[in-house]
Length: 177
Image (cartoon, rainbow, N blue to C red):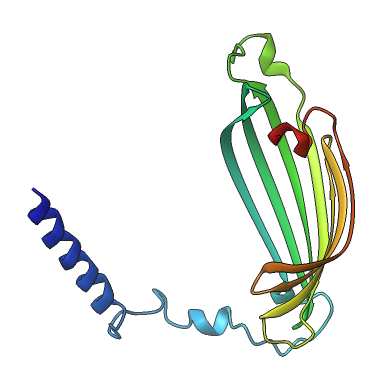
């Protein structure tokens, strides 16, 4: 059985690797779609649609906090605006519901209020190469408030220049100790 899995793994790896070099796959299903959604814009106005991005997501998770299991359902709305090529502003709005794992889902516990959290930030790429950036961000939620100024390389924080944090007593970082 192990030999079968080894052969299958090799065939799958080679197929995927060789599939990356195919050039006969069409890049669009409709002729002229690239002209309609070109990334280059002649209109350099402040209200250009190509500068604006909007994403939505939904997630469900299960965590343990102080030995209590909890389920968290979250809806996220992300709005991003590119002021310039090297200056990006974004905001995230979260609606989430925290319930105990043993709560009655269809009973009175379903009426738990929705919580809302918000964070906003500015990312500045001084070298305009996508490798090095300065990230200024603020977070606000019922459980945590904080502001940060970070120096980042490839998206990883190298140096935190400024921090200000305030935690809820039950849901702060001390619960991991």
